Structure formats: structure tokens, C-alpha cells
Length: 119
Image (cartoon, rainbow, N blue to C red; front, side, top):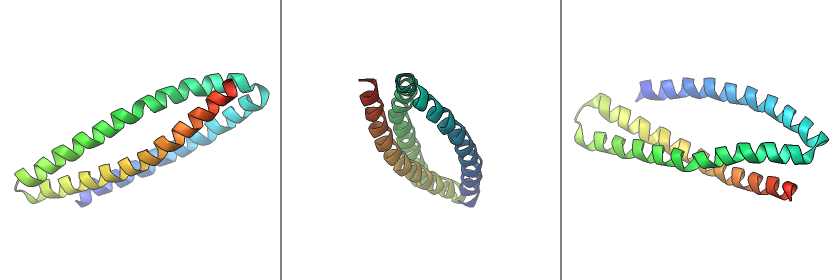
């Protein structure tokens, strides 16, 4: 279990750092656009958020598929490393699913607020 969790942790550090850097830059740009032209901001953000919101079902499906495959491996393959990998993948996908459920709820609220700006 340690190797997949270590790889996931390192990927999380790298991906999280990149996301934080990109988000900081994006917030600065969006703040500038919002202050100068709210309609342009809303049009740009609505387009981006439609793409973001379209990805939620795909992500949930991917997590579900990984969990089902991991459960099959856990019960059908009698090797210690497979058991560890399967348990690690189930844990990782559970964490990602929990995070994405909250992120999706926030994204839906944000998208609704953008639509209010446009109207």
C-alpha cells in the first residue's frame, strides 16, 4: 500500500502546487476583468464553468470504475501486493470523490451567481 500512496501523495503535492499557482494568477486576472467589465467577466467565466461542470460526471464514473476494478482485484487475486494496491486505490478514489462532491456543489453555486451577473 505504501508505494501507491506515496506516488499519490507526491502527485498531490505537485498537482496541488501547480493548481495553487495557476489559481492565484487566474484570480488576479478575473478580478481585473470583473472590475472593468462585469458582462465580459460573466461571459468568460460561464464558458469556463460549463466545461468544469461537464467534467464532474466523468470524474465520478472514473472513480467508480477504479473502485469496482479494485474490489475485484481485492477479492479475486491472492497476492499481497495486489491487495495493497487495491486498498490504496479504494482509499484514494474515496478521498477524491469526497473532495469533488464538495467542489461540485461550490461550482454549481458559483455558476448560478455568474448567470445572475449576465441577466
